[in-house]
Image 1: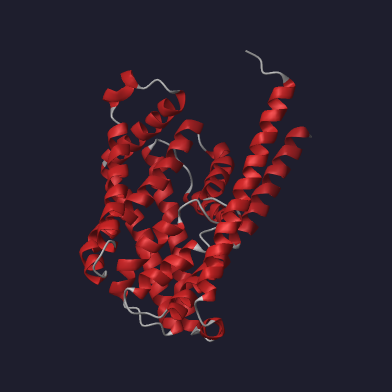
Image 2: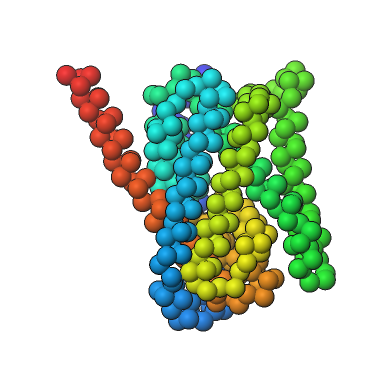
Length: 332
């Protein structure tokens, strides 16, 4: 059935308006949480700590964040190789960095994933396998965070005060584990005959391919790389703590940072701003670290993540110029 032009235009307008309202809502969430955090700390002291940060440890943190992007690129390449694609590692690095740039400027990590798909498409044989690679790349990231949180759960519970906090943490962690287990079960071939909804069929196919990749010997390497990506986040935070003279040990960083990063990934804010700062203040407060110190640490982390993503903008310009040159050559 052909959709009338007016109906199609109206549908496009509704989607556009929905997108604008969603961006506005996320801006409000980021602004509201940041305002709440800043209202409860000594802002002048936090700014003083940030401006007086030790440059050597700042360099270590930047190096960890850069290595994190390179490791993420290797993980993505290994996923694509498992799906029988043969992308160059350099291309994976460039497009992962480009994706980080998009993630810092747009309301959701989906923007970065969409950019990776769009610019990698000419370099792979199958769009379906490319989409699956991005889905699996994201899922392994969530799996790594879940594994780190589960490993640290006994120590986290011991730090929590009596009451509902510990059960809530256990339920939340169990929810993440159950969700990952459900996705694994949903990837089973025995469900093919029972799935009818088109979007669920597409998801099932992606998950089947993902399961096939993870079941290969290289699947273990992909999970190890995903764990290394999260470990580098922890090391970056630990280095920033040293730069700011915040009394955070490496063990405490491994306990708290995965939880903070998981919450910051929720699609309710702009690039995690606000959620990351609020989560860091609450989490490090359990270790006896003052809110001002925790907020300064989270804000500096956000600034460095934005800084390390800037080369992605240069890569975007280079990729666009290359596409334009190829298009002009084809037209000529």
